Length: 135
Image (cartoon, rainbow, N blue to C red; front, side, top):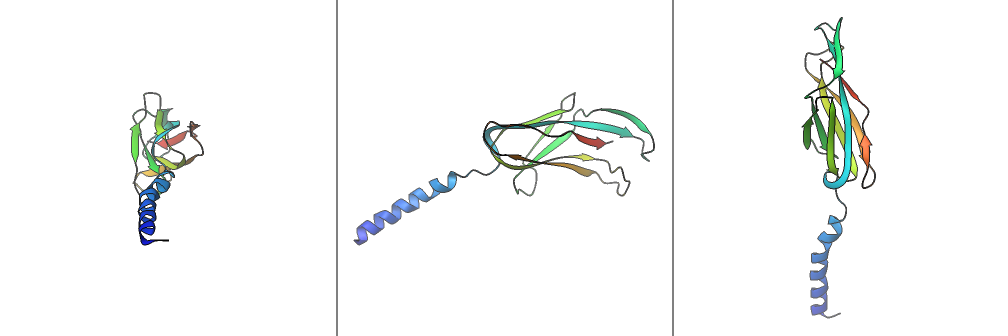
C-alpha cells in the first residue's frame, strides 16, 4: 500500500472514530423516557415521640444523578400533591434522592432517602416507589 493511501486511510479513521463513540450515549437528558414518583411526609415532634401529621410532600426538592456523576445533575420541587417528574432521559442508571430528618436521632443532619432506577429502553415511563421523609 502506498504512503498516500495509508495517509488517506489514517485521516478517514481519525474523522470517523468520534462517530462510533458518539453512538453510545451516557445517561442523561436528550432521550424520551420519564422517571416520576411521589414524596410522602411524616411530620413528628422533635423527639419523634408524637406524630403531628402525614401528608404528600409539597415543595420538597428531589435530586437526580446521571450514572456515576459525583453530584446531582438535575433537581425539581414536588407539586402541591407530592408529585415530581424528570423527563427527556436516555437509557442508563439514575439515582434519585431527597432529604429527611434522621428518625433514629443519631444525627441532627439531614439524611438522604435514595432510590436507584434503570431505564432499559427508549420511551419508558418509570414510576419510582414513594419516598417517605420525616419532618
